[in-house]
Image (spheres, rainbow, N blue to C red):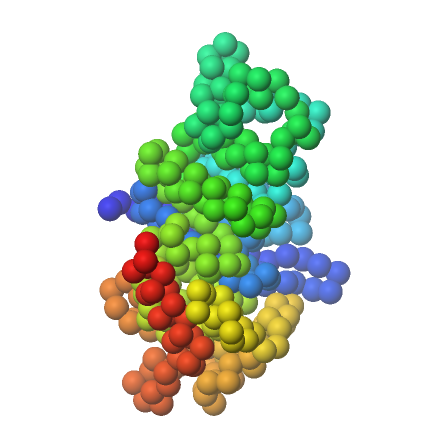
Amino acid sequence: MSKLLEVKDLKVSFNTYNGEVQAVRGVSFDLNKGETLAIVGESGSGKSVTSTTLMGLLPKPQGFIKSGQILFEGEDLVKKSAKEMQKIRGNDIAMVFQDPMSSLNPTMKVGNQIMEGLIKHQNMNRADAKKKATELLELVGIPHPDVRMNQYPHQFSGGMRQRVVIAIALACNPKLLIADEPTTALDVTIQAQILELMKKIQEETNSALIFITHDLGVVANVADRVAVMYAGKVVEVGTVDDIFYNPKHPYTWGLLGSMPTLDSSDEELYAIPGSPPDLLNPPKGDAFAPRNKFALEIDTVMEPPMFKVSDTHYAATWLLHEDAPKIEPPESVKRRMQGFSKMEGEQ
């Protein structure tokens, strides 16, 4: 598989009245063509800032890239001008945001909003753009697309609006689609439909997908690989099987332990103690140490490197050092892992 995207040691900060917030603190990951990478973590872990930076949509002048590279098909997006990014955004890289109503223009008909990108980026005339927009509405599962083309966003349900946003994102056949919490505002049934739709479209178009979520449960049936973020850093990365069946970082244990499974109805869900650190003054050593009951002395003084677990699996925890005590995941996490195995066996 050839690499479509390589993010190398990306650091992003925001200037505030209180000082510099170090929102992304040296993030590195890559993405192959046709692959789905899920980025998971609590609110404030840097997931959305990372995706916004990839799109070149950091709010200026507050937000800025301190250092790092974003190589898209070998070209560094960090060095692109705002005008150059306009040509890439929507054409080569597209994004589906969390709240469709903030993405859609309430005063424009839905059809015109889909046609806009086709006319601008694909140089289509209005007749061809209208035909393509109707086909896109049909592709994302909206009934009576001819009628719906002439309606406004307020005439659609939440799930249907999200489908429209996906249609807009797909309009120019992007090579990379970024979905930032696309199902958070939807009920469980509609959430499942949207996830299935995105998976189907991604397979049909062979586009790469970055799926950002705080919910590990969403990831299992969507992603090929998972990157777990905490306090502006990737703390564990691996295949879906690596993360769900062989997690190594205590933070990943906490995320898994807080997930309900078919067998967890009679037990209390685990909650990670404490709160994420203040990134105005990031802590010394491992940022997760104050919330980690398995923390070692070295965690408070030195940041752990990425230890190799396998060719596909890496985790930044001193527990993987050869001299560290051997600590197993908590029983609650083991039960979740067994629950995932059971669900997979029943599918």
